[in-house]
Image (cartoon, rainbow, N blue to C red):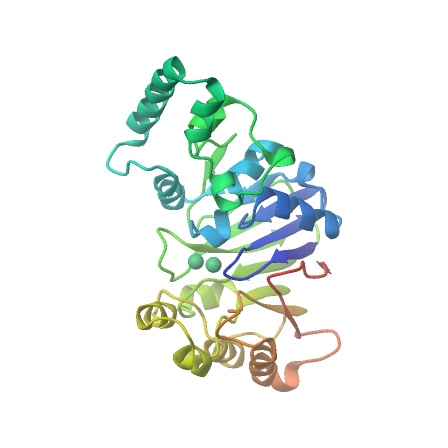
Length: 321
Ligand SMILES: [Zn+2]
Ligand SMILES: [Zn+2]
């Protein structure tokens, strides 16, 4: 089983989980082009992806989603709440029902087509890929006007619910609720059935509630948020309201809260702990690593409890078990 963190942080998140012939992408928070580039760097093939799983609808987790999913015809798994929030985010007329909005878009498009050249009509449609990355071009560009008309179009959507496990190919997926200011945010535990190995992802959480502590028992690889140093955040450049949001129970996990979990609740059985979603403004890699390593203390050995840092700019070397 393999975990490859392609990116982690407020500018974009994406991780590939692989077991046997199954490939799952968790979050697609960079442009399709950047995701493809990073997958190529670590030897992952986007054509081989069986599914994209979305933790929550914040832009740093979904910005390349629709373009990537359409380009490679990949089914996307959301909770219903996250899917609805994502559709609303891409839909300018929030008071309309989705069906009504789609109807209106199609009608307006037909009207414009009567008065303007076809390419002008297309340019006025919302393309989330283009909004995300103005440089987004050929390899990922959508081709058909039909798809252009609906920014929330996906080749296939599957719903899951936190607390209800499901399978994708050779991987069992167990989603769990996390406390974060999104519609229905989730973390995941992945279990490669044939190898009895577990890998978990828990980022974007304000604190570690009992259900998350339970979910993270017995994992072999844990990607855990270590977002900010409390002092750096308090003294840092963010406006007070943003600081309050980050610090809140539905914000992000501090180095101290991450260390507290590792010290008091973590069972010590992981091969690797990956610290992720580090703030570039309010954290230093050394501080995050030091806090986690001190918390793990004597339990760190050559074969277990290795602490590594996931970063924003480059993919992390694949963790293979
Ligand atoms: Zn995030
Ligand atoms: Zn978030």
